[in-house]
Image (cartoon, rainbow, N blue to C red; front, side):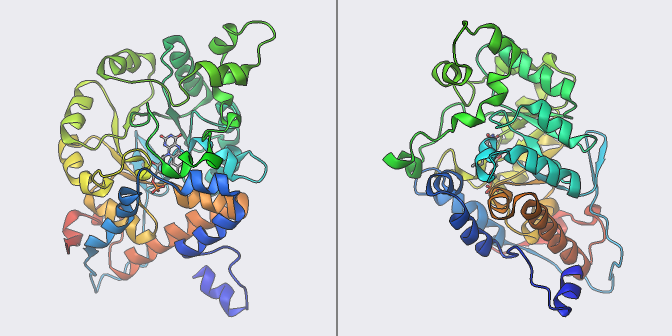
Length: 377
Ligand code: FNR
């Protein structure tokens, strides 16, 4: 309504509303190298595209004579009420999407303005403590790439807890980098900017091991597996007691892994295929969601990969996701319009979702159930 009212007074929207327009503007706003890194995925990017297309295979039934003038999208996660079911998925190198390189701080500001939680990545341009300071009381979560050095892994977790993050998402699907042809073109190599290692280079355990005169970034690049190391069930058993914070396992898509994760003390499943960046040829994350939910049996299930519209958010919620993550859209928005751009894109997604709930007669999140959907093949 706000947008239409502005339109009547001749106001032009400053930032794109359609995802395709946002994508086009972002490709112009980013350097080619950053654009290819952010927009690209694994293999011929079939899974990445399918992540988006699969949403069209579900349709939402409209329900009339409900006309909910008041809607409530709020949810509860780990006992905390959140104003909407949407969050910003962790994008480690989000720093490079901001004109000033401080993308993590910009997203934290957008999070404060919208109440949409931000997942601060391990691969951050600014140390997690600085991001937490910007977030203040707004709930945020920390994404962990787990260094094989357990002292250092524990240190990252303890720092996140001390800084006030409200949960840890351990990313499981990136201990080796995916086969990403766009990044393997000579000009686009190497892929990870050294400016995104601040959480490693500021870490007290890491710094203790530095020899006098050594350059922290250079040592980090040379000695650390940037995306963490291999992480297995026994590593999870070690990690679990390191923190009181809720532990989310990101990248789980198979129901047997969900059941096992529950047995090993996970507090939430984060169903995702990393936006199709890691392995091509796999199932879309949305196709995995129903079985994941079934196996989770009441444990919260966060979801991302392929969400591009308010309609997509509604469908993931109706299938049963507890909360829905946005990836590339907010990275593009950051490149196009900084903090305001991110706020605009998040608010647009939420506005579309809210209007669908209004038009189609679903007043609250609880009314969005699998019965609201029909699979149209
Ligand atoms: C990511 N993602 C990601 N995930 C994670 O756990 N740690 C990370 O450091 C990153 N880094 C990252 C960089 C870039 C450029 C992108 C696009 C994505 C994955 C992210 O959290 C999320 O799973 C996907 O982005 C969701 O898919 P869509 O919305 O981009 O399709």
